[in-house]
Amino acid sequence: MKEKESGTLQTLDRGLSTIELVAQSSEGLTVAAIAKALGVHRAIAYRIVSTLETHAMVTRSPDGRVLLGIGIPAIAGQFMPQFRVLAEAPLRKLASDAAATAFIAVAEGDDCVAMQVEEPPGHLIRVGYRVGSRHALSQGAAGLAILAARPPQRDDPESVRQARADGYSLTQGQLQRGAVGVAVALGRTDNRAGSPEFSIGVVAMEDLDIERAIRCVKETVRCLDGLMRRA
Amino acid sequence: MKEKESGTLQTLDRGLSTIELVAQSSEGLTVAAIAKALGVHRAIAYRIVSTLETHAMVTRSPDGRVLLGIGIPAIAGQFMPQFRVLAEAPLRKLASDAAATAFIAVAEGDDCVAMQVEEPPGHLIRVGYRVGSRHALSQGAAGLAILAARPPQRDDPESVRQARADGYSLTQGQLQRGAVGVAVALGRTDNRAGSPEFSIGVVAMEDLDIERAIRCVKETVRCLDGLMRRA
DNA sequence: AACATTATGTGCGATAATAGAGACAGAGGA
DNA sequence: TCCTCTGTCTCTATTATCGCACATAATGTT
Image 1 (cartoon, chains in turn brown, red, cyan, yellow):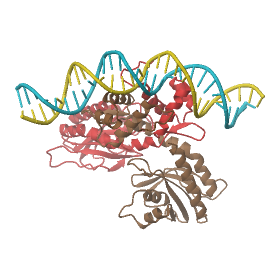
Image 2 (cartoon, helix red, strand yellow; image 1 turned 180 degrees about the vertical axis):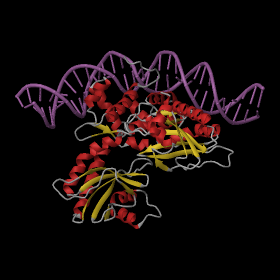
Image 3 (cartoon, chains in turn purple, yellow, red, cyan; image 1 turned 90 degrees about the horizontal axis):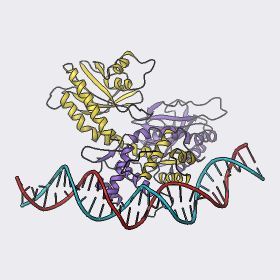
Image 4 (cartoon, protein in one colour; image 1 turned 30 degrees about the horizontal axis):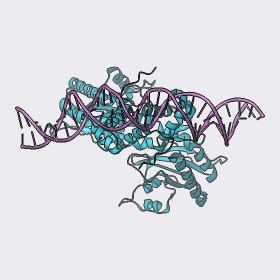
């Protein structure tokens, strides 16, 4: 049946599974449905839901269905700052290795926002990329990488198709004259709706060693994916 | 000690507390610190963290500290759609009671975005408010209500101070000529960084019964707060 | 309307999972 | 070197969990 991993707690495991189940349902689940999905007795599901409720991880709609609670976004709001901490070292390494300004960008609506930037040491002239700056997803390597990571659309522009085929996006002068950008999307393929879409990459002047940069960026993606995965 | 609520699961409770602890820490916690905070043996904390890890609720940084994992935002992405479901009925009631277009708006950066709109039944002429439309937080009742709910700032404009003092925001013609808007912020005072900021309100033509609208909006806020709370 | 049927929520013992403690090996740090 | 901290393992008493059964509410059917 279930290969129960050693050293894990059954009750907590079920509780977390419940949160995931509720999250995946679009309109909430009844307690009975949760019990069935978990393969446990209804009474157990009630206790699980009660406990989740006291932590505001779920709420119950007036008709009894279980929905995600306000505690979820409250916790999620802290994810980004912590992700920064985790990403700082690899990003700094990337900047150093590729000798270029390294960044992590995140999709926000139809925009692409620079979330974190590390500049390479020892270069007096460097390409700036301000944290918080936004531009259209369809412009610049960072946004293209994110678009390319999404499932193919009928009306994808050539630049997105290209990036998808290559496994990286490469733009020259799209956001700034004389700047070259390389980026790769970060994150899993199981892109359930709503999970944030990141890309990671570098920008530099035209003297960027592109081959090397691509290698470095991909390496960093592997590294960060590994840090997040560890499942 | 702790008033242990009956019908809740200790193990799950501790696991959720652990998530909250980790979320509140800015740079992650060691397992030992978690154990101490929970008042349990280290071995227990390890088991809890292991279980959370298998669900990607937390990750471990290379130096061993526990950070929020990628599973958190993945789940959080589903919060908004579910919140809509929950809010639909009260919002519809608000539109009907106040005889005006009711909305829920959410802060996104410095913008205010209309998240959900319900129009009153039986009115041929009504003020439209498109879902997804954005404007500055500082403009319009919806945004002002959110700003007023934040801790007071030195440079708050008069409109924000006014709204904070009144307990609601009221604007006339700010976003559209001849339109009147009333809004109240939704949500708790314990506004831990990162939790989304909502406001709820109505817009109508100048013939709006403002007193009545304020009452209806506040009533709806109480209703929704109750739906989310249930802690 | 009265009934049948299904769903929801809550006590109560038997059982099995967890708590808790101690011990141990390895990795750094002082 | 010693000391501290981490991560893992084993073991048993405890107690929290499980599943059953009952009470209640909501629904649908004749």
